[in-house]
Image 1 (cartoon, chains in turn cyan, orange):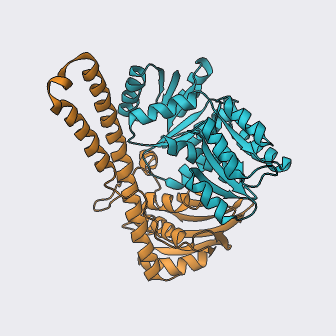
Image 2 (image 1 turned 120 degrees about the vertical axis):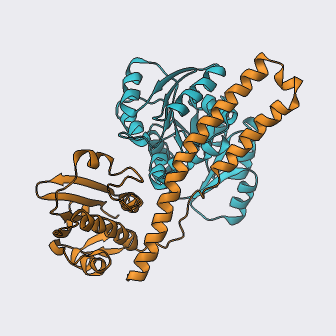
Image 3 (image 1 turned 135 degrees about the horizontal axis):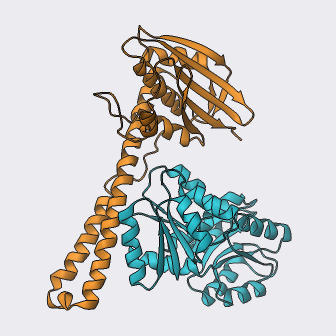
Amino acid sequence: MKVLIVDDEHALRITLAANLELAGAITVEASDGPEALRLLSTHEVDLVITDFQMPGMNGLELLRAMRARSIEIPVIMMTAFALEDQLDQAIGGGVFAVLSKPFDVDRAWRLFARAAERPAVLVVDDAPEVLSSCVESLRAVGVRAESASTAAEALERVRTGTVDVCVLDLCLRETTGDALMEGLCAIAPSLQVIAVSGYQLPAMVQKMLSRGAQTFLPKPIDPRELVRTVAFARSRRA
Amino acid sequence: MNHREILRASELLLAEELAATLRHRQNNHIAAVRNSAFYIRQKVTRATTLSSDDPRVGAFFELIDRELVSASNALPAQARARTVQAGKLQASMVGSLLWPLVGDARCELRILVDEPVQVPDELGLAVALRCLMANAVEALEPAGGVVTLSSQRTAGGGFLEVRNDGNGFEPEVLERAREPFFSTREGHLGVGLNVAARAIALNGGRLELQQEPGGAVARLLLAEVG
């Protein structure tokens, strides 16, 4: 795994790089956004880990600049928490996950390894217009997304092992959301499920949340909220 | 909106800004130390028998980690107990409300443009303007001068602006003005601009500082409220 670490704090950068190298990664370091963009044009990397608050170009601006250059590499945003609401924008801007400083290196490593594999978000819904709008809003910010309109298709996709988050409609024609969730989680126990529905079904929502669904999103789904919820689900698993 | 509410909101925003600044600095230091300890622990475990010879080695590495986690949680993650209320701010209204709090007998307040600007957080922005007006008055000390207020709608939203006709920012001061705890004046904490920047950033806008012919300009730029 080749990782680009971007942070203006030298001490943080070198100590994180040391730990990643110890775990077997190859690291490249940049002290600011412009240097990161220069390195990205000459280096092949699997993952970018960047600080959020940096002088000049912040982490969100770096992410946007990358996407504007069609660089689709996953980005993990580190934060020591200063301006929480700006961070919220970054999360809605398509980061893979957010990592609070200081972090547990072991757990962070698992998050990095998973991000570098570029797993996809699977959207399961039998309404074609909902399906395509969800997938499009994720792809628009560089988040890898796939769609499934039937339970069989969803199970098949999860079986490939390249899906880590599932956006699941509670009311499918042929099955219920909680039954399908059970099937999906049996194949991939670490799958993060985000339940969605146009109806408030308290019993069903409760049932799914109690079985480990991350969260519930009511329809119509706000695109930014969807992007944020996916990033939070991935961050929580770290 | 009255003086009491503005002063209370000022206190809250100041406390929030101080906590956020300290938390940010502290967490960066703690993260580097935690990463270093983790690295050394791995090396010690792999390359030596230190950990197995003496259980305290492992226990102390655990202790370092635990203590660092506690230290990083010492400051609250977020203090947002304030209720936010949207409204319209206008230079003349802001001036008559805030000038008694920051004004000086040697200074004169003038209104340049006086359009109502829609803001998502009336009180927060009043606090930000109070900081900017206080800075403008202080910049004119000791001789005094003119402080100008404007509120103007634009295509993308609007802005609220405070000018003073003093000597303006020295280039190196302008560069460092946004640093927390930076002040050119004795007895000042140097976080006024940070509080203003925080209040406007929380509302999706930004603070602009400029040196223009005729003095210093501080502008709160607001995006249109959807």
